[in-house]
Image (cartoon, rainbow, N blue to C red; front, side, top):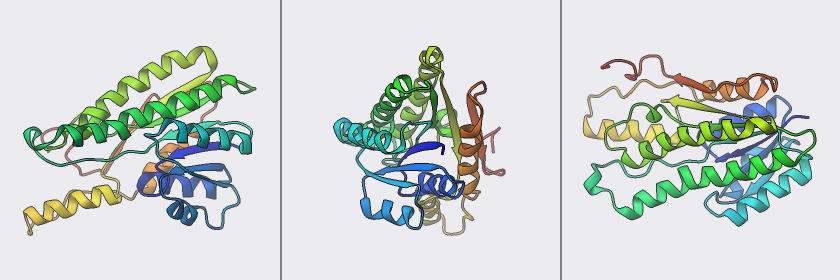
Amino acid sequence: MKTILITGASSGIGRATAELFLDKGWQVGLLARRRDALEDVAQGHDGAVILPADVTDPDATARAFDSFAAKAGRLDVLFNNAGMFGPSAPPDEVTVEDFDAVMAVNLRGMFIAARLAFAQMRAQVPQGGRIVNNGSISAHSPRPGSICYTTTKHAVTGLTKSLSLDGRPFDIACGQLDIGNARTELVQALVDKARQDDPDASGPPTMDVTHAARAVLHMAELPAEANVQFMTVTATQMPFIGRG
C-alpha cells in the first residue's frame, strides 16, 4: 500500500486531497491541529492515521512523523499543504506579529515538515520518495493586500528548488503545485469580503477543490524516474494571465 502524509488535512485542499487518496486505497497520515476534524475526515477509512500536531511545533510534528512511519513502514509522499492567509490589508496596517504568524505556518512549518520527510525518505529502504509543496499562484502574481501570504509563497518556490536539488542523490523528488481559486474556506472568505465591499459584485471565478486534489494525485502517482517540478491549476476565468 502506498503511503502519504498530508499536513493541514482537516479542511480545504488538504481535506479534499486526503479523502481522494483514501478512496484510492492509500494509507494516509492526517496531520493538523484539531483531532476532532481529523476524526471526521478519517471516518470509515481503515487507511487513515490521525496525527494531531501543529506544524509550527517541531517536536510535536516530529512525533507525528515518527508515529506514521512506525505504523506505515515508510513514507512515499508528503503533501506539504498546511497554510494560512493572514490579514488582508496594506503593508502599513499589517503588524509584525501578524507577519510572523503567517511566516511560522506557511514557511517555517513547511520547512519543518519537509526536513522530517526528507530524513525519513533518505533513511528508509528502498531509499527515496516525493515531496509536493502547496504553493499558490501568489508565488507568481499577488492579490492586493496579501503581503504576508505572497511573501511566504514566493519563498516556498525557493524551498521547492532546494529540496529538488538536494534530494537527487537520495531519489527524493520535489514538486510544487500552484493553485488558484479552489473553493475552500479560505477562498470563500475572500469572496465574502469582496461582496461586502461591493454587494453587486459576482465574486471571483472559482473551481471545485477536487481538481486540486486530483493534481496532487497525478504528481504522487508518477514513477520515481519522473517529476512534475511545477504545476499550475486555476479556475479558467480567473484574472491570472494578462490584465484580467
